Image (cartoon, rainbow, N blue to C red):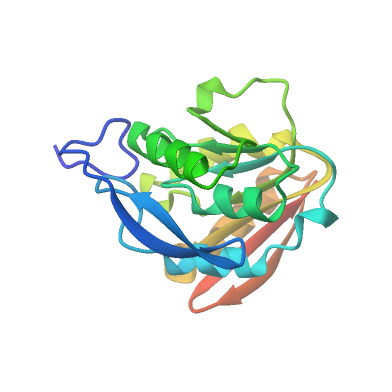
Length: 201
């Protein structure tokens, strides 16, 4: 069976390797490995997201959530720019969680909480959600992921989701607006074929 970055337990040897990525305004040395999303470099969609999201100082008080953390760039960037925040990095892929946990340790980021989705306490609401969501899991699974997490935005909080235009950014934005009438849905930015969808509680 073909293994994907959204597999819970990727096959193949776990062989971490170092790459450099711009996170928190500086080049950082981080670990990646095969079997996770974009193991060779910081992918373009995530770059666009990190350039687009506002300063966390403007978000409500509370934790930040990264859905589908991969090796951790979005969560690590949030923790580097706002070290006083608790940042939850969530992924079904156990290899992704291991890499994110180790990268947070290497960077001295004590506020990063790495977890499988079912390990996140149900009573936590989030001051901001930042995600390069796993579009390739298919529409039904993706919609289930968003139905799980978007209702957990605290009042005044926003989710920022980066999606490639050719992978359905416009249709996903319309679906979120139709599915979550309590959210104000707009486009926060676009660049290099990627759209950043904002959904604000």
